[in-house]
Length: 305
Image 1 (tube, rainbow, N blue to C red):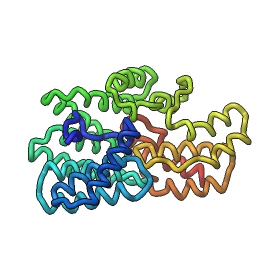
Image 2: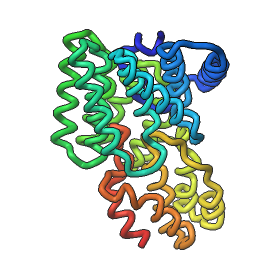
Image 3: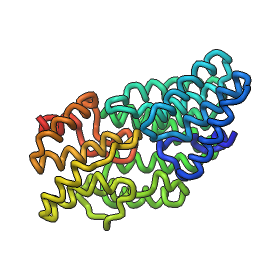
Image 4: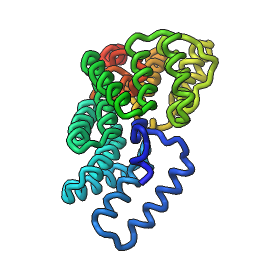
């Protein structure tokens, strides 16, 4: 199956080709309607869950859970590794889930190490790196970055350096560090991750990257309008925001909306965002991405209060 051929299997919860992913999800759904033995059903459920990464509906999470029940029954380590990858992709359905993602990463790294599944072992360390960064535990994140780089050197997995370089920029943020890391990302052919991410990263430093916001534009727009003195338009943009995708930048999007709400003194929106972000009070906004951080969620909650 193609998923197991990646240098790093499915670390970013946004698809590179949404059209292709919709086609694959449709094909998987049709296949599940037919007669299948349990191992094949489990693999197809995992595929469906992976292709539905970032979606806000329940099907992806349900598919991952069903696949996990099958994998734990069959005892196939490769299938269980794929399932843990799929379940990770659907542990973004609300803020504050970094500890749950860390637990998935730890199980995955241990399973993969015991069964010589190098790419999944790397994935387990990268998940733990991101989750530790989200929880503000940078020494732990550093250790997982080192472990991932060591495995990448041993097994010739050049894509890993993209993620550890992005983490290095998060660890010691500067415009030069971000631009260097994003140069590597641009060469890696991962448009689902790359689009708009440099601009968003530089926004954490208050650096204007020229406005290529990609899918993050709706959440940045209210702040840009406030800076331009167009407060009425900013309020309209804030109140018309779509639901955030369920991905590694969920808390970052909510942070941007919260900053705009505070600046506009939009108290109804502030109350909604306070309730949404409260479960992530111990986390760093956006750091689950392993790329950027808008700072402690707790500080933003205090401003919202």
